[in-house]
Image (cartoon, rainbow, N blue to C red; front, side):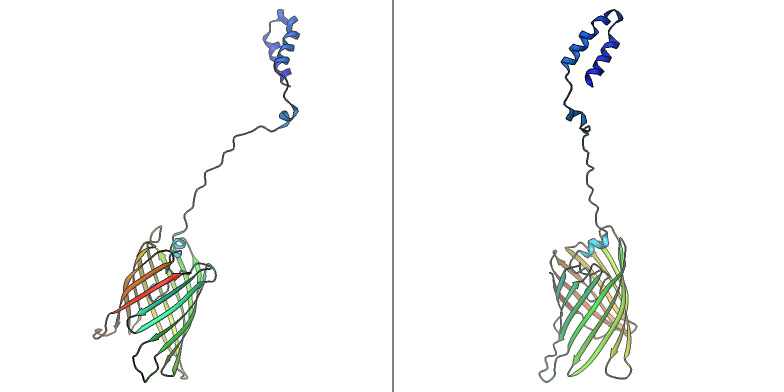
Length: 276
C-alpha cells in the first residue's frame, strides 16, 4: 500500500520528459520502503490514553459529624444522628456522687440505632434498697439531607425503688442541623411524650422539650443542653474531649423549677465512652 502511494507522489512530481525513468524510480522507492507486515496494517491506531484525575468528593457535613464518637447524643438528650452501622458505643456516666448509668448503643443499619442502659442511685441507707433503673430504646432516622437529619425515638424504662416498680414509656422526635460545611457547629431540638405507669388505673402523662448546641471539632466539643417542661428542668454545660474511639466528658448540671430555684445545687456530670 505504501509503495503505491509513494509511486503516485513520485509520478506527480516527475516532469513529463522524465516519465521514461518512472519505473526505475518507483522500483527504487518500493525497495527503500518495504511494506510493513500485515499484522501492523490490521492493528488499530494507537492513541495516547488519557485518564481523568480522580476528584475526592467530601462527605456531607451531617455524615462527617456522625462519624465522630458520641455524635448520637448530648449529655442527657439524643440528637438525630445514630451510631454508624456495624459499630457500638459503650458509655459510663455519673451524676456525682449519687447516680451512675452504664449503657451501650449499636448501629443496626445506617439509619437505625438500638440502645440499652442500666443505672442506680446511691442512697447510703442500709435499711432500704437502692433505686435502680433499666431501659431499652430505638432511634430511627426518618429523613436526612446534607446538613440536617430528623429521627423518631421510642423507649421503655423501669424504675424500681424499695420494692415498688414504675414503668415509663416514651415517644419522641428530634431534629439536628449543621451550621457549616464540616458540622463544627450543630444544634438539635425535639420533644418527648412520656406515660408513667405507677400501677394505678390511669397512667400519668408528661411532656418534655429538649434543646442542644455543640461547637468544636471531632476531638474537642463544647456542649450546652436544656431539657424540661413548664414546671422545671435541668440545664447542662460542659465539654467532650477524645479521639476516634475513646472520649471523656465533663459538665455541670443545674436543675431549675418554676420558682426561684432556691436550694437546687449544681452537680458535676462525668463520663467516658468507647467506640467498639
